[in-house]
Length: 409
Figure 1 (cartoon, rainbow, N blue to C red):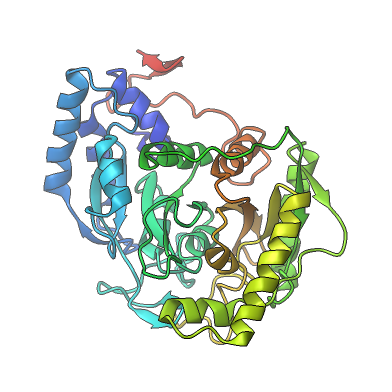
Figure 2 (cartoon, rainbow, N blue to C red; figure 1 turned 180 degrees about the horizontal axis):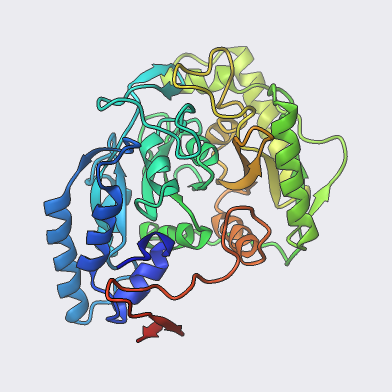
């Protein structure tokens, strides 16, 4: 199987369900792609167990099981393990865990970076840059084409930040829609992928009881742009790249940018810290909470989306961010609980990836993912393929041709 890295998760599953590829072939290709793992995206690789699991998927498919993600090799965030809620459901849907993705050990309260036990996890764009944290290995593995999907968790931006800095898609559902990974309810499971359609497939298999939300009447959707949310120290170069991407979405007919006074929140740092530490709620914390809730409620009365840069600055080096607040534009939505996604927005003049963050109303994940998927299909997002991939080729040179849900030789 020579074109493994060109396939999305849904591509792989479709080919296996239709009998054109086996799960063992797909997982063998994933293990070959991982190889020596020069990026140190994985802290462990489970080759023997993964091949055995793939054989089990093939046996289920042969018996007629219609697994929505049959054969899809996944990276499992090391701090979660295969027994977490989302990873268990992914395996039930046919995914095959191939290894534990690395998590940096260095931290400063709300930011993680540095060594992971095997050394530094490298950013596929530039090894001098951090891939972000804490889902560092998951982001690097997906961006490098080692796996099409990896699990993550997002307590302050730990899915969205590494996805943005590695030029891929990172998705956090509404807080509480899936079991939180902390007592405060800030840390939501999430996923890192290259294609929004794979994020939607992820949501379909992990969400056993979807919440139906009121849908917007149609496109274009009203969207409020903010480069700073009222408090972040956003680099002008990063803001400019993200703003151009927002304008691309408007030009494609997906959104209408709402101009006006904009969204002005108070810095949520004290609230986030108090929630995380279960500290008593002071009057200052109450003021920030009430003010931000009112601002967000008013915003979502006039618009379906909030759009910001994902991070206020480009990727930092492996020694950490210094005084920069990588989480400044993400953790407001861990506190508020709104669903959010980061999409590739392009690069700065120095080649550093910039992410565009889209935030939707509570429980409106499907609207959020639909916007992202339409942007992909319209070619409005840099770095994504705007059309289906060329037909994949097997090791013997045989080409597969797509026809509906299945493929034929």
